[in-house]
Amino acid sequence: MAINIITFGTFDVFHLGHLRILQRAKKLGDYLFVGISTDALNFSKKGCKPVYSQEERMEIVASIRYVDGVFLEESLEQKASYLKQYKADILVMGDDWRGKFDHFQKICKVIYLPRTPSISTTEVIEKIRR
Ligand code: CTP
Image (cartoon, rainbow, N blue to C red; front, side, top):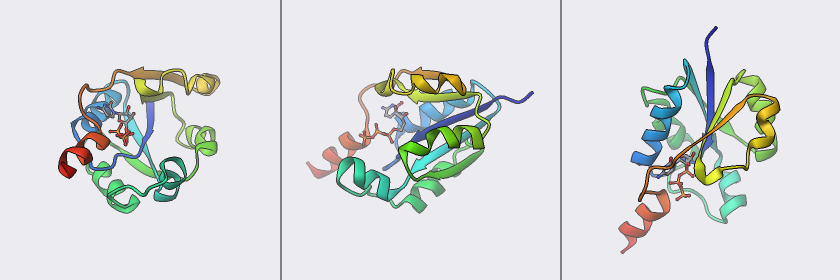
Protein backbone atom coordinates (compact mmCIF):
# COMPACT_ATOMS: atom_id res chain seq x y z
CA MET A 1 0.00 0.00 0.00
CA ALA A 2 1.29 3.48 -0.91
CA ILE A 3 2.03 5.86 1.94
CA ASN A 4 0.56 9.36 1.57
CA ILE A 5 2.31 12.30 3.18
CA ILE A 6 0.73 15.70 3.67
CA THR A 7 2.17 19.02 4.78
CA PHE A 8 1.00 22.63 4.96
CA GLY A 9 2.58 26.05 4.72
CA THR A 10 2.73 29.43 3.06
CA PHE A 11 5.93 28.77 1.11
CA ASP A 12 6.32 32.45 0.27
CA VAL A 13 9.61 33.62 -1.30
CA PHE A 14 10.60 29.96 -1.73
CA HIS A 15 13.91 29.14 -0.05
CA LEU A 16 16.19 26.24 0.90
CA GLY A 17 14.36 25.58 4.18
CA HIS A 18 11.18 24.98 2.16
CA LEU A 19 12.96 22.73 -0.33
CA ARG A 20 14.53 20.63 2.42
CA ILE A 21 11.35 20.02 4.36
CA LEU A 22 9.62 18.88 1.17
CA GLN A 23 12.54 16.60 0.33
CA ARG A 24 12.59 15.07 3.83
CA ALA A 25 8.80 14.73 3.93
CA LYS A 26 8.76 12.86 0.61
CA LYS A 27 11.35 10.38 1.91
CA LEU A 28 8.87 9.25 4.57
CA GLY A 29 6.45 7.81 2.00
CA ASP A 30 5.37 7.57 -1.63
CA TYR A 31 3.18 10.58 -2.41
CA LEU A 32 3.55 14.10 -1.03
CA PHE A 33 0.62 16.53 -1.03
CA VAL A 34 1.13 20.16 0.00
CA GLY A 35 -1.55 22.53 1.27
CA ILE A 36 -0.63 26.09 0.36
CA SER A 37 -2.28 28.66 2.60
CA THR A 38 -4.38 31.16 0.72
CA ASP A 39 -3.60 34.88 0.61
CA ALA A 40 -6.74 35.47 2.70
CA LEU A 41 -5.69 32.94 5.36
CA ASN A 42 -2.27 34.61 5.60
CA PHE A 43 -3.86 37.99 5.88
CA SER A 44 -6.07 36.81 8.72
CA LYS A 45 -3.10 35.23 10.57
CA LYS A 46 -0.36 37.81 9.98
CA GLY A 47 -2.17 40.96 8.89
CA CYS A 48 -0.38 41.11 5.53
CA LYS A 49 -0.47 39.37 2.20
CA PRO A 50 2.43 37.17 1.09
CA VAL A 51 4.89 38.59 -1.47
CA TYR A 52 3.85 35.96 -4.02
CA SER A 53 0.19 35.28 -4.72
CA GLN A 54 -1.38 31.94 -3.87
CA GLU A 55 -1.36 31.00 -7.57
CA GLU A 56 2.35 31.78 -7.87
CA ARG A 57 3.18 29.90 -4.66
CA MET A 58 1.14 26.89 -5.83
CA GLU A 59 2.90 26.85 -9.20
CA ILE A 60 6.35 27.01 -7.60
CA VAL A 61 5.67 24.25 -5.05
CA ALA A 62 3.94 22.05 -7.65
CA SER A 63 7.07 22.17 -9.80
CA ILE A 64 9.28 20.72 -7.06
CA ARG A 65 10.20 17.14 -7.92
CA TYR A 66 9.32 15.79 -4.46
CA VAL A 67 5.76 17.13 -4.66
CA ASP A 68 2.97 15.05 -6.17
CA GLY A 69 0.08 17.44 -5.66
CA VAL A 70 -0.82 20.87 -4.27
CA PHE A 71 -4.08 22.38 -3.08
CA LEU A 72 -5.17 25.59 -1.39
CA GLU A 73 -5.60 25.58 2.38
CA GLU A 74 -8.56 27.90 2.85
CA SER A 75 -8.85 27.72 6.63
CA LEU A 76 -7.12 26.13 9.61
CA GLU A 77 -10.41 24.56 10.72
CA GLN A 78 -10.53 22.43 7.57
CA LYS A 79 -7.23 20.62 8.29
CA ALA A 80 -8.94 17.39 9.38
CA SER A 81 -11.01 17.27 6.21
CA TYR A 82 -7.90 17.83 4.05
CA LEU A 83 -6.18 14.95 5.87
CA LYS A 84 -9.13 12.69 5.08
CA GLN A 85 -9.54 13.94 1.50
CA TYR A 86 -5.89 13.19 0.69
CA LYS A 87 -5.96 9.94 2.68
CA ALA A 88 -2.94 11.13 4.62
CA ASP A 89 -0.98 8.48 6.49
CA ILE A 90 1.51 11.01 7.86
CA LEU A 91 1.23 14.74 8.54
CA VAL A 92 4.66 16.41 8.43
CA MET A 93 5.37 19.86 9.85
CA GLY A 94 8.49 21.79 10.81
CA ASP A 95 9.28 21.69 14.51
CA ASP A 96 8.28 25.33 14.94
CA TRP A 97 4.83 23.70 15.06
CA ARG A 98 5.78 21.01 17.62
CA GLY A 99 2.77 19.91 19.66
CA LYS A 100 0.31 22.07 17.74
CA PHE A 101 -0.98 19.25 15.54
CA ASP A 102 -0.88 16.37 18.01
CA HIS A 103 -4.67 16.18 18.11
CA PHE A 104 -4.64 14.93 14.49
CA GLN A 105 -2.98 11.73 15.70
CA LYS A 106 -6.41 10.11 15.70
CA ILE A 107 -6.50 10.56 11.92
CA CYS A 108 -2.87 9.94 10.94
CA LYS A 109 0.69 9.88 12.24
CA VAL A 110 2.11 13.34 13.01
CA ILE A 111 5.83 13.98 12.52
CA TYR A 112 7.67 17.23 13.25
CA LEU A 113 10.94 17.64 11.37
CA PRO A 114 13.69 19.99 12.54
CA ARG A 115 13.70 23.30 10.68
CA THR A 116 16.67 24.16 8.51
CA PRO A 117 18.64 26.61 10.64
CA SER A 118 19.17 30.29 9.86
CA ILE A 119 16.64 30.80 7.07
CA SER A 120 13.05 31.93 6.86
CA THR A 121 10.87 33.97 4.54
CA THR A 122 10.82 36.73 7.14
CA GLU A 123 14.64 36.81 7.26
CA VAL A 124 14.98 36.86 3.46
CA ILE A 125 12.56 39.78 3.21
CA GLU A 126 14.43 41.61 5.99
CA LYS A 127 17.77 41.02 4.26
CA ILE A 128 16.48 42.43 0.98
CA ARG A 129 14.95 45.39 2.79
CA ARG A 130 18.27 46.24 4.46
N1 CTP B 1 10.58 25.38 7.25
C1 CTP B 1 11.74 24.65 7.56
N2 CTP B 1 12.93 25.31 7.70
C2 CTP B 1 12.99 26.64 7.56
C3 CTP B 1 11.83 27.41 7.24
C4 CTP B 1 10.63 26.72 7.09
O1 CTP B 1 11.71 23.42 7.72
N3 CTP B 1 14.15 27.25 7.74
C5 CTP B 1 9.31 24.66 7.15
C6 CTP B 1 8.28 25.13 8.19
O2 CTP B 1 8.54 24.52 9.44
C7 CTP B 1 6.98 24.70 7.56
C8 CTP B 1 7.26 24.85 6.05
O3 CTP B 1 8.70 24.95 5.91
O4 CTP B 1 6.70 23.34 7.87
C9 CTP B 1 6.61 26.09 5.47
O5 CTP B 1 7.05 27.19 6.26
P1 CTP B 1 6.60 28.69 6.06
O6 CTP B 1 5.95 29.18 7.31
O7 CTP B 1 5.89 28.86 4.79
O8 CTP B 1 8.07 29.38 5.91
P2 CTP B 1 8.90 30.30 6.88
O9 CTP B 1 10.21 30.57 6.22
O10 CTP B 1 8.95 29.73 8.26
O11 CTP B 1 8.04 31.64 6.86
P3 CTP B 1 7.93 32.87 7.89
O12 CTP B 1 9.29 33.48 8.03
O13 CTP B 1 6.93 33.79 7.24
O14 CTP B 1 7.41 32.29 9.20
